[in-house]
Image (tube, rainbow, N blue to C red; front, top):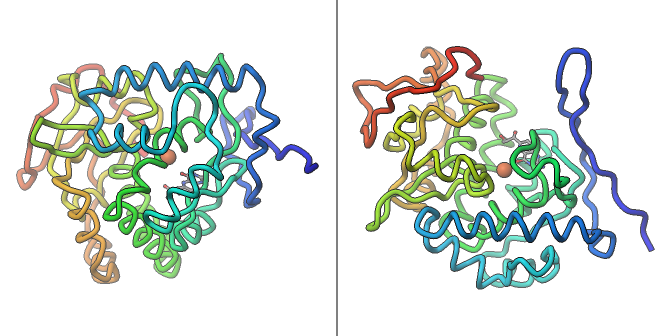
Length: 296
Ligand code: HBI
Ligand code: FE
């Protein structure tokens, strides 16, 4: 019997919250989940599923069902992996917390999606500052069954590994791309705008805010525009970028990024809430409640 893996979380110091990184790949210690862990999963699962009907992209919800995710218990990675391997060749691997960027990119490039093994406590139902099992499994894993999205994520990982040779500005640009697509992306469907970003899908407040609030901008996806746009980590996003299809993401990521990094090197970044003349604007936000500082 293996020891239970560590639960690696940020450190609270006199300088504020400091992220802690880990590289271990571990077996999901499924037998060690407590009744409280399963109850937290069940509560979050039911709450989000109720909210997401008519808000999440329909395929996301269908895929969750098809994968057997439900409120009865925390899913087993092995069960999900059988379906993922058969469908797109991806697998999920258990991790203890945040990975260093390059390690994270290498896993994606090899079609391995890191999933945090531990779940938040009942006191953290609405917010925590790092990924946990609910965010990773509920939010990210269903889309790994979609071939176009899965290819995009792999290409993204390969791009990330290469970007390490281009310096920190290129890495910042790639992080913005991940943030505004994989984490906070919206998609245009025949029924209207829908959510596909995992950071929204796993958040009660943002699931409603991103579609219904008058505050944020909703702007058509444009690769270089997104790579220049700063973002929020501690409040709802000021801007959401809207794709037409997962294929659009894959097509945008196919070209060599080296000329893009070179072109962007001469340009300023864009504030999280800015709207440009060149944008395709679906909604111009009224900015209500926006903090004036704090874009990263
Ligand atoms: N590690 N476990 C984990 N999960 C993430 O989403 C993650 C990470 N390390 C780095 C990282 N994300 C970011 O750098 C992405 O923005 C690329
Ligand atoms: Fe995430």
